[in-house]
Length: 438
Length: 146
Image (cartoon, rainbow over all chains, first blue to last red; front, side):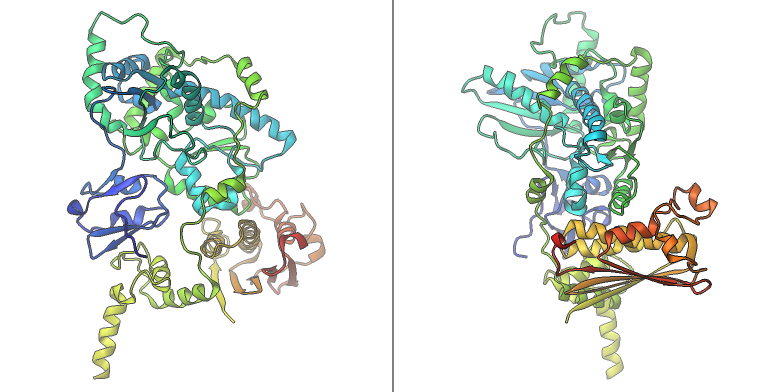
């Protein structure tokens, strides 16, 4: 391999901070990371943006590519697309207050994603119900909401692509609404969409490839990036008695319900989808385990599974400030005090569903080509050599060679991307054999 | 001719670890960019085979053999054997223990499921003689021929 990128689409590596501990190697679910010469990282392009490496690095040597830009809204129209996880960072503050705080920071529009999440839930439920008779998709259907899960399936469980619920994701619904209703208001102006996210997954959804970049730019911001500047604004709003009366023009620009962040909890998606045989699974390892089981033909009695690769769901995203358990309690308290409420008229949504407004135009086959395997395919002869090589390696998966485990190292060697002498075990054995001979 | 063989061992009644052979086989086939549908069929067969061994048989061996033309899975156990193979092939017929059923297994779909997913299946068994299930997948015949 000629190029050795030190960043992926989602994460960036800082060589000067790396201590070479190899913790990131082991947690990467797609085995994307290799360490070269102790401290330089090479990424094999299979990153799914889960953020496990950011989470585990004790030296802060891995960060998200997303970061807070300067001068929001200064010479452009700034539109914030707000993950409800942001609300859970502020205990006792209504979501509307948090959105107002964003306005104070210079955003011209603040879009509440939970509004579209509710929309998605209605459409998802409808699709699942209809699938009972139409059987156009196989059971169990898998939630498309977490983009990391979608990428994990595409790279490691391609046979499960037909299981992904073919309903537009909340982010896609949100983006479409902005395109249709807000963008046209600003002819010929520079427009930037700021995605305020709890995880390193970029704004770009794998299900909706970029086809509209001409009209606006897209920037991802981590919640932990915007929190320090947002907090004083939110506090000011809480203490001031002067509340702007009408500061929004669109129904999705504020959020009047207190339970908005509920959907960001693990189980929050299926809690509002009235399907009995459903399940919420969270955690990277747990997700992979369950996907393996589905691939072996199990869990067919389940109709819908909500997967989140972060523990406790999006509240546990790596770019958050408040710990997931504390954030979860914040959400629960808000629900206890204010209750749960639906904002959207179900009948209207079902009529839109009928018109195909929630339909996704990407078939599993299209998805498969979108996610072409990025690793070179291994031939049978190569597999045979790998097998023999693994049998001769130490088998300790020590990571000293810079690959996450012996199997991956053997693959790299056979594919000409690593030297056999990188293996300490082989090197030591080579030395002993040398002294025996003399 | 290039070929590869992998052998796995599953301990009797080890419901926790059963399935690992299948995951390993599937992962190998994925790295070789085999057709996802084929990978799935092989995964189902291998898993059902493992579970059969774990539930009824005893200590179970899974041998995976692949060359350019076909993939052969041999699942053998030293358990009590199958008295009436034809009956065992009937969907829904099961002799699974209460323990297995409580765990959600033993619905009597194991062998029928394997038959459905494999290109060829052969079973050698007899009372007290253990069981050998051999399933074959052709790599040369197209999906259409099935």
